[in-house]
Image (cartoon, helix red, strand yellow):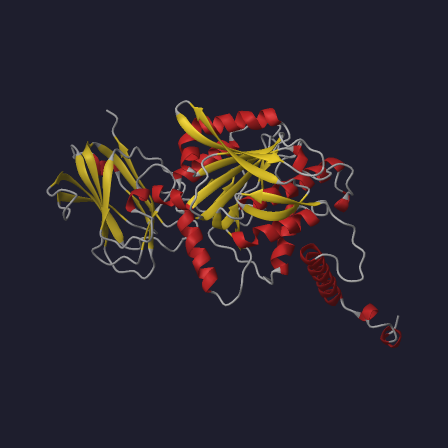
Length: 515
């Protein structure tokens, strides 16, 4: 075809590939907006639209319209398990379609708080082919990384969504046994739902050439999420969803609040903030949008995976750019998918087991790698501590790191041992994966046998002996230094010059002589 012939083609046919892509995306957006309009305002004038079964759902006093879910009444009960008082709420059917009003539709275990919180953390969970403690590990990680005063602002909603109710009940009892105090305080809440809430999941169209089993699995997942969103819409100001096989970064709540505050000060409106780059992990919404999101998902539950649908929702709310916090606050742990015969696909492969791991390269939890003996001690500093990244986090054995503003010459960090320690070596790391430049550029470590003043006043120890200088943010002592040292009461890190960068002390590892 020559240029003269090409110029005779209709305008659409002459579009370049990039222009075609823009046209297709624009058409998709028009379709999304059209269907949302149909969902929220009814059928557009002149367009035939079959009547959907819509019934009222009352959850915690609020009446909403929810497809295929019956009218719900909340009945309070009390369940005492091993001297732990657990508030149990049962949701029961009562509608015009003939279901028994006495048949439980869903139930909630855990104290219902009267005061609205800041953040709801939603965790849907179903059975895997291989029994695993993923969910319990995830809950423990959240508990360990949430300060006590923060627990009053957070509600964790665990949705046991498997179709095997015996399995759900076993998991529920494990959570009650292990985390009963948090259920009783309202920090954790468990929910289950019965099959009556679900639309048809079999014989659905097989988009993307997915198998019938995968279509059923992903369609149920969409409805699971929609149910969680609808239930959680009035618990807190914001809602974040994670999976049941993740670990949490220390001070995750501080990170979330800080990023939300920054986003709210921006010029553009937002519908979605992301705290992980993976799937549906760490996706945060305004609770005021959850009802709309729930209905949106139900409209397309059999069309696409939920990981795609929520993107269309944020686009329809005029958010065109991703707002992703770096570093990430949640890391994926699981190897086995909740889809039977499925494994997670990711960049790293375990050659010994034939499994793949999906991991977030932007996640940084300050994982300890040196694993020192670290005898009991107090950590004191003259540095300006940032937020809740306290000095103890550099010395304790669990994940985390100490983070301070720019250090000045003469600033110090003291480790005061409860009992004099027979040390054989010290290894100190500064900087983290996410904050590679926040190292101690110029400094040294010293030890002293005697504490002259108590930790409650200005620390004084004597006599000090240098054990190592910092090189590229790392300080490693020579074991010979300790040969003539009978015991050590003080370990000091001293800054020897000002620096503009902040300081992250990832790990202070102290190894002692077991003899």
